[in-house]
Length: 71
Image (cartoon, rainbow, N blue to C red; front, side, top):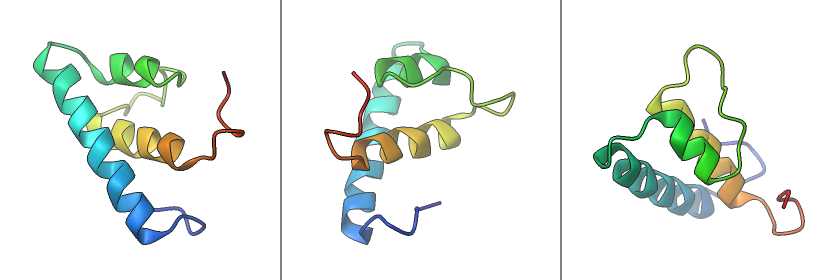
């Protein structure tokens, strides 16, 4: 679900990048936790950490400004 403060076009592009990245990780035998780690996110979104929730979490990270992303 798109956060209210993110522009629709930015959200659509972030989702596309996140989906493409996750598809590559899945193709290589990875799991959602691997994709989260690749973007510096904590690998536990709870017991329901599926690909859909992972894609949305990555898209949210991609929509953050560079000064808001933890290094």
